[in-house]
Length: 506
Image 1 (cartoon, rainbow, N blue to C red):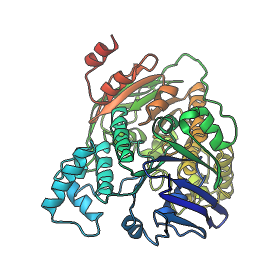
Image 2: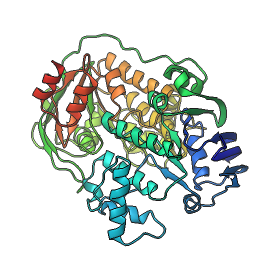
Image 3: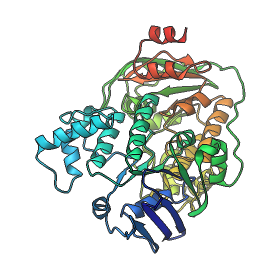
Image 4: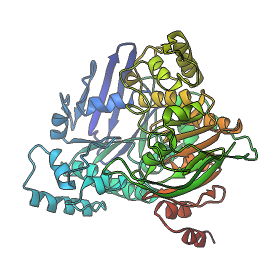
C-alpha cells in the first residue's frame, strides 16, 4: 500500500544531545502505527516535527506523495495532520463547544458547531454534551473533547501521545473501538504509549527508537511485551521483585478526613479513612480528578487538616505544613513533575536543595551548602540512571521520564518513614518504570510505609499489598490486592459500594 506519511532521514540536535538521528519510517492509510522507545529516545521530538512544532535540521517528509514541511501546527492541521497531546489543552471554565471552537481556524456559529459535536461524538462512540463545562467533566470525557476536536478536522493522520494514561479499563476499550473505526475508514494513527500490552492489542506495526535512532521495526502482535521492552532498551529487563515481610506497626493513619478542594473545579475529600503499616505499600487507584491531588496535598501538608484526621505513630500531624512533615520523615512526590515537584528553570542541584535541605543537612544556620547539594543531586542521578549532562542542567531540559526518575529518587534517598507518591511512573518507559517500582518495593522492605496513588492499575496490582479506589472524593475500604479481579477494581473505581464489590467477588 502506498504510504500516507513518509519520513526520510529526519535529524534534530539540541545543545549536548542528538534527539533524532536520521530517522526514517512510513505510515500507511488505515494503519495504527506505534512509536516505541525509552524516555529520551526521541519520540516527542519526532512527532513535534511532524506536527510543525519543531523544525528539523535535516531530512524530509512526504504526505500523500507531496513534500510536507509544516512551519507551524496550523499548516499541519490544514494538511490533514491532527494531534492529541498527553496533557490536555482545555479551559475548565469554558464549555465543550467553546473549547472546540478555540481549536478551529474558522468555527461555525455555536448552534451548528454544537450539532456537529453531537453528531461526530455519537458516530465514534464518544458521546459529549456540547454545553457542559469542561471543569465538570471526568478525565475520560476531557479526552473525548480533545479527540472530537481533532475529528472535526477530518484528519488523514491522527497522532496520539500516551492517550490511555488517565482512563479506566472500560474507557480504554471505548477509545480502542473508536481508533479501530477510524482506521477502518482510512485514517492513519501514530500511537505513542509505554503500555506495551496496549500496543500489542491495538497496533499493526511498530517503529522502535533508541537514543534517537530507529533500531527495529516489527509487528507488535508477533512479539511479547518483554521482547518489545528489550528492543527499546537493548538489554534484558528484570521485573520488580518483592521481599515478603510481615507489615509492622501502623505508621500513618487517616480517619474521617474531609477537606474542601482549593480548586473550584477540584474534588473535595469526603470522610476518607485508611491506615498504612511499616513495610506496606497501599495502592490508591481511580480516574483522574476524583480527589487524588487533594489527598496528596492533605498528606504532604500543603493542605493542612483540622484535628486528628491525619496522624503519625498516633500523634496528630494534620496541622503541620510540608517542611514540618519533612522533619518527621513524612515525604511526598506530587503528580505534576514540572512546576510542582520541580522548578523548571532551576538546576537539578537547586531542585535537590528545595526539598532535601532539611533531611540531608544541606543548610546550616541559614547558609546553603551548595557542594553538598550538588553531591546529593549527583547521587540521585547515578542511583536512578537519570539521563542528563550533569546536575547543573535545568529541570525543564530533561525528558519527562528522566525528570520523573530524579523527582522520585530525590525523595527515596532521603530515607522517609512515610512516602506518598502520585503517579510515580506516568509517561515513564518500561525500564525506568521497573526501576522506580523496585525502589518503592525496596523502601517498603526497609520499613517505610508507602502510599502509591496511580491510575495505572497494572502498576498497583504489581507493587501494592492493599488496594483502595477514590471516587468523587470518597475512598473505598482497602482490600488485599491478591485475588482482586479487573471487574471488582472497575466497580470500586466507579464508586460501587463495598457490598456490591463483595457480591461480584462471590
